[in-house]
Image (cartoon, rainbow, N blue to C red; front, side):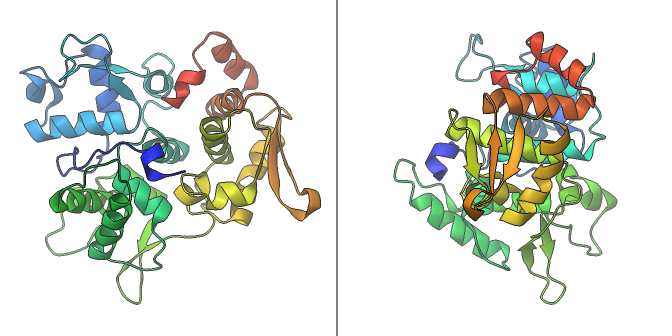
Length: 331
């Protein structure tokens, strides 16, 4: 997958703020209460944050696909927002899967949603999918992203300051906070996605590095959902995929979760054995490891995700039959 196919040319729309604890749900709740919640003159009072944070919360809700622009908004240049079906499934007050984000799988799911098409964080997409340095600093990452984006001839080159803001936001989102004398407790504990441990610091050099290897907190169901979600976007009529492809291809879950082929197989195995109802299987015909499935990858992805949160296939199936889980999950 190419950057231009996966992402939109959107830069530094987060007002320099990385996502904070509570912001994902706050964006969803605000959209449920009032489609003009983020453009209302009283938005700062209603949301309890400053003007720039209002814009940032709106952006992160859109980026995580929890809310979307209201297609019926009278002002399409500054549209209101409405919750997506995915947002409702996750955060709805009446039966949302994980309203208070207590399940570690939800953080992995939101991470995948931030990177999956249509991604509005091209710098993030390029970092996870096209950047291969073992160790790096912010300047090196910025330079690499600038080069990757320059290849996208369809896009207008972003300003240097915008790239820098996106790189800074990414590192503040995933990397351990700098423990300096000026760091407050809020600085150290303010971003939920740091718990994923995807970017660490080298003990020897202090430079950033991706944390490769198995991810103990990544639930098998979330890994399986991401794989099937990716295939549903790329090749919806397929019934098998090589694990090497979903480990190494730009845009695939292996890149997003920093997993090798064998680690991805280990992550997928429990879901194949217990959560898919026999419709998902790992095999190695002719020595090439692959994942196979029966039926629509989109519908199976949704079924596995619902089963994970409910731990009950019958309840998950009832929600699917009610139309609460379906193709709109891809939004």
